Image (cartoon, rainbow, N blue to C red):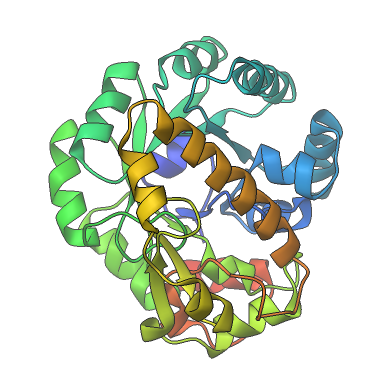
Length: 324
């Protein structure tokens, strides 16, 4: 069914449901399957190129060969790394050339992305966890916000969906909820709360289309809400993961040296770079590995409502049916 909100009109889709960009899980088949069913699949460019091995333009064309419906693009824009930012600018230009018109920015100042995308008739939403980041996005010209709450997987926020919505409502733009939604009932509850759309990540990992390992998918199916823990030992800031023997061994708090490095104005950059490189390497390995003793799996508290592996299109249709 078609359910219209300000977000669906911006994204030009039928169902206010997003498959959020996931490193390393956003493979082309998953992105396409969600969009084909009426939701919005979002391309994570580092996953597309580095993990899944596609030339960027060829990867977009592969997705477009699987669905003629809209797809989105995720632009991580934080940092002063000129090589990375130049590559992101190139990716955005290619995405626009290939017809993409929905962009989701994460971190950093989205002003330059908005200028590029708006000139081509597209829209930009911005990932936020609190008001100050939302203000930065609004000042940069974004058209909407994705509100990442405390129930999300990966780098979660610190506030409940209700509290975060109330905090962001005064900005007067469409708000998409991200975190903790694994069932149609939760989906409709967030829309009744006032959200213009809902972004899912963990639920779409447990699908045949996702290229994550069977062990990762089964861990999501088997986990309950209490199995989701936050650890600082992966990136220097809390990351929501499924507790397993590796996480128990690793621990959840950054060590004294790391904390000292992260506090320094100059040293925090080097510590974050080390964390990022190590995290990227291990996450890529965990995509296909079944060795829970040496890997970690990002997931949110939505695992409580995920009891099976099912096709992504079926998930979109079941969530859409709940809107009747």
